[in-house]
Length: 495
Image (cartoon, rainbow, N blue to C red; front, side, top):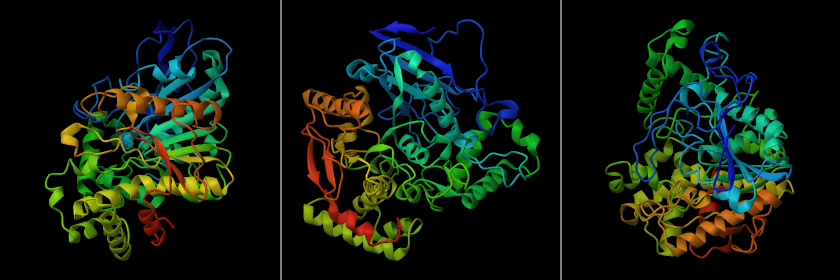
């Protein structure tokens, strides 16, 4: 039993899987057991264990945490047989933070404006959702490192099986997500277990390039055991750790890897190409047509990485040698030198700042977010499937005197209508941008085409790389920031 508020039926804290606790810790999610009678669904369920960021422009409100966190939430205009489009939100947070019950998603604006059914989900995070233990424990704990993604698959199966009861159409399901949420959608596009569970994907600031191999995942597992101070065969000790203890170990792992590895500053919780759940490189799978039936809308923000470099004291003083050292951890030194040169030339030509700090921020943002999205759009176009791009979202945050620019996560408030003075900005121009984005997202969910009255015709990406620029005056450009994109083509980073 849910509740009816502001013309919406709202159901919160619906369990879609058995609690992954006790002997089920680190295992694939199990189906939820049926319950007798009517279950209350008026309050959000517990969120996955995580280290909460303090309240602020991009912070979180404290919520109850528990390993028993596999809940989803539904907002619907009607409990009828209307077969409304379904939009399933997968939250971001570097696979270590976030939840489907964050207040910024709980606005009800998309279901009311677009006559759609919206679902948000929780999934296991950090060391409980993305720690591979299968090999190093000799199979005693068969964790693949993809349990968080398997949670998402089971949630989608629940939606497929049950959403008609909530007035939704199980044959018209759109996933949308930001950062790790977008990366999750990219992963799901390459997973056999997710085949047929969704039909469209909106990938905001994240797609399919954020993975590690089983070998790297095993190295993370051994580091986890080292930091935990236990032996590989001590299964009881592993199961005895409390969630707060696991979070402390995770923090130590991240600290120990600073300056090393593929994505050391972000997270040690990453989807794993394990040859089973994720059979092969995600971009390769997409290029080969594995997800050719899925229509995609993918995009990134202009200044993605500024959110992270602004958290690093003294970063603005980095020199070119420091930039090359950082980039050499994730690419060859020759590729790093070529990219730095190309970005400096392109930025100078446009009259943009070309300091080492600005160049690194632009390169790393494109490495993590823009280029994987470009590759996804290219692959889907090659598969004769519609793909739409909004590189770029260029609206600038007013926070910190405007130095964040169009940073990571800024577009979320406009999508959900939760934008504010402090981080997103407000006023008539912000209202106009929010209307354009919401209408486009809703049109895409309804028809697979984001074109709508408020934003106009949104052409497919295509050979001309037609791209929507999202700002106070949304408009289409052919191949924006083409010099930078071509520079990546000349490297082997995304080969």
